[in-house]
Length: 577
Image (cartoon, rainbow, N blue to C red; front, side, top):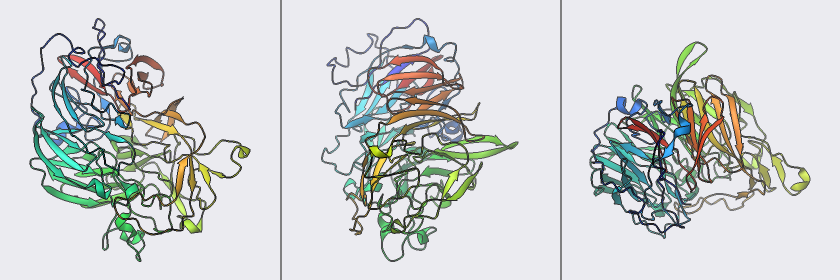
């Protein structure tokens, strides 16, 4: 997939030049696509950012993936607002030397902005530093990934870089974690954090916090054991490791069978950049499905901490609390959306919240001090299939689902399969159900507006076909595909959902349905806007309160990452990749 990088300025008289990423249909050189001016930005190395700097909503730059440590994807800037957004024009166009242009790559990285320089990583893990002022590429680092990597689950991509202590940090699909000099792009250190041959890859943007680089590893479909690691930002030395699937003697190990080693291959990998509350000293993330994905016979029990929200101590990596969203997950209902932190007034009291939009179609809202539900999440009985060792109950959030949770097709259209809704189990008879594993809220980051307490979700209304009954119950070694049953798409058209929910009630405020999926994530602003990208290349600004479209721009290539909003030399900009 070919992505696009677009810089836009909220003025009224501007050069209509597009900042775009590599396109297969164009052979225009990088120099041709730049402005004639050569007034380049000098790269200013980042400091050891404090927790206070990274917690505040970003203004002069966009310092981390998600905007701040709370992952709110929110800008307090107001130059571009509901009245002025019609004047938003493209400024310049830069090309990224063809990196990530092949169809197997996907450009899913949110741009990072610091002191007049934009940092972005392509789906090929190549990193570019680009001048805000001119669009000129100031330096690039080529990852030179091995094309024979076989354990990539869901697309060749990277979802961003981290800045800190004068370095740019990037995780790679081959399991390497690399620190680059922020001024030159030259490698400072590089470590083999995990091996791709064992099923582990890095797709999330690393997190810089308090002198550490914190990173999760993808690969739950490959017989892996999920983990989050922290490294010294100066030299790459390992500081701590937290395993998302507990071992013998650890909290939660009793939710796995004691007569086999299913826990060693239990999945629960981390797909996104964690959130941090410096005041509480906690890091928050959600985890992916247990392994194998669709066969529960091998792993009776709740399978902690798979498909859960988890809080750990930022300095030590020690467990603090968890909330499991899906017990004994059989449907690949990953917690793959980034956790967002915010304070919200509920029943007259300001509460510290953590929320995440899940593939099952709900937003789960808990107290971030202890993991207890804030609005209410009720354990309710669900249909049973003894051969799958199904959980008797599942936690159901109070409020509204943001995607349909029931297949709405005529039975005669699928005479040989069962039809179901969320938590319908399956075995030898095939089941078509919603949401599917590709539905609900996947990785595209949500956003939050602290002024209205609205939470914005990019989602997909999609069904999947599930079929169990596999006789082979051998535990798969690391690095081998470990699904446990048949699985595939259902011949039912999918559509995109973009929705706003009120976090005081978890009720829908408005919802839009698109013909294509919603895959970019979103960013909100104090100007009353929410920016969201489309697969066909449109970047759209909506009235954040009503969802009404106020402005739209065709970038020329699909947008698969949230935009970033920042101020430079007194002007507000929007940049999207």
